[in-house]
Image (cartoon, rainbow, N blue to C red):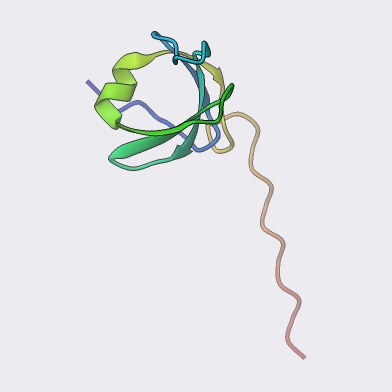
Length: 81
């Protein structure tokens, strides 16, 4: 199974709810372990990537760099005098 493309700032809905009652999480760290933050109570959790991929029900909102709007071009530096 291919790796799910996750980006910082993505908001995902999970299959199970958090004890506070929310099921929406924002991705705040990427790597082998994914850092997620509950949007209701602010709790941060580190979870293994394969485990999170199985628990994701849907994407509520995609973060920057997810293929939505193009990123702005970098501003060139002024010439040195």
